[in-house]
Length: 214
Image (cartoon, rainbow, N blue to C red; front, side, top):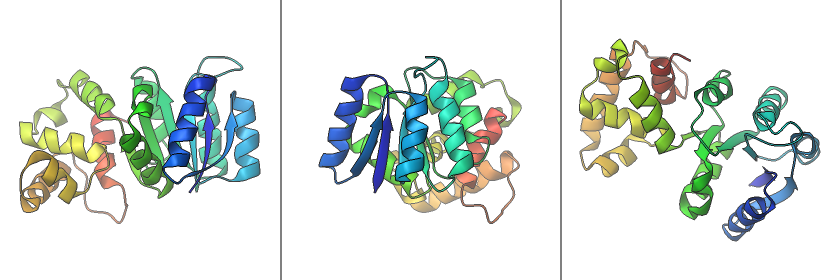
């Protein structure tokens, strides 16, 4: 799997590249600013672009802007956005065009090799990844919303696991319940959040997005 990494912090960028190379990924290019990132994505056509939200030249949300451009120009390229803090608007904008091939992790996760490599693989395969701390904080902020109030505590736990991209089997293992029980919870969540059955591949993540109002 071919990867481009963009971060103006050289040590973080080099460290992530080394971890991914050791895990078998092909890091084809690195970039220190948003403009260089776009040039290298267009030239190398990677499977995944790992992008810091705040980058030169503006040191604001230039990384996010570049990620949105990549999503528009090359929807087949997965985008894994890194952020120092939980920012609702970044997640909202990134997922506005759909959840396939999108990830959002806090920067602290870069040092967690298994989590980082799993996230890159999942996004590269057009799956979705949301950092568990991001999910927990954002769900916590919206507890007064009626749709969330209708969920049981267990359903909220299942929803958080779904948002991280886990399958029913993985959720069952994480929560120490049967897979059939998870299936019942998932069905109930979809019903309570008014998400009817469709042929979309990412209804699980859309359950979280519907709750967040995106």
